Image (cartoon, rainbow, N blue to C red):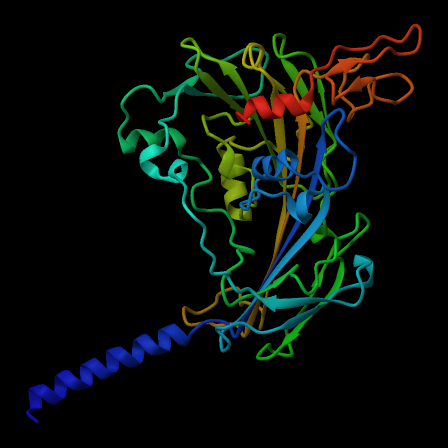
Length: 431
């Protein structure tokens, strides 16, 4: 073999070795925990329990759940999602998360490998791309808290006009970008909780505060960490609305001690000038944003940036007015809110203040926290404030949501003519 050939071979082997080492680099184990608290205040809807059909998928998609279903199978309350990755076990391992007694869920959670199901379904003619009808109508985006609509609004996207891909990207872009913090993503080969073997529900009085220990084949014995009070579940969003869309709706809420920022997103549907349906969006941002990507976890660094840009509201904020005239012609409108919690990042060994470029921990763990809520706009009780379905002075609802009729109240007690929330939800999304 010639000298040049030997040199070339040596270089190739060195490159291959470097690539192999790069692929093997990384923590031995990684663990992610997502804590969410979900609530909604819709008159006539149940206070607790499962919401099937329109409730589960619709409310879930609006509250920032990628799967479309609300956490916990369509229920309000607290949820915990966990994911474990062991580098030496790419097919996944069964693991155990020993939890504090304050979770009130027993001593531990069972983590099982995620296996995507290989299923197929028949594609009907209606499902084929060539038969999908082109969208009609417009999307209108408004933004900013205040009494009146600001100059230059709304931002309009008209589906009836020819559009270039760059116009789609520009209109539907978001300040959230790709900076949402990475957490539980249900990746193949990773072990997850909840699962079919351990589907238990997180109780409303659950607290993750305390010592955590993760174990399993290939998991370092040192994978233990502490969750303090500042990284526990956030409380439920307690949101109320006052006023009607034609006059402006003041949305107020109880501030949360550990919340880092808030963001509001409202949406409704109205008939457009050509009879097609207009989708109307408004956000509490000081800059135009479709808002959907911001209804989910954000990294601490990005929250700081969003606060500086006035995209999200300060943690001291307790109210925001949806300007008058945005939803006055809507067939129904909802407002969603997210409270961003802090984020806990731990590793072993602990990352040095001036870590070298090749520093590598044995394991890492991350806990993300958020709380989301939803309420209807323009559905007031006799005091002018929405209170989760209690419309009369005796605390009972006087509206029959099956028939859409308002029942007679006790003598002397005014009964508001409230719309049917189920019909509003269906009308809003064309179901």
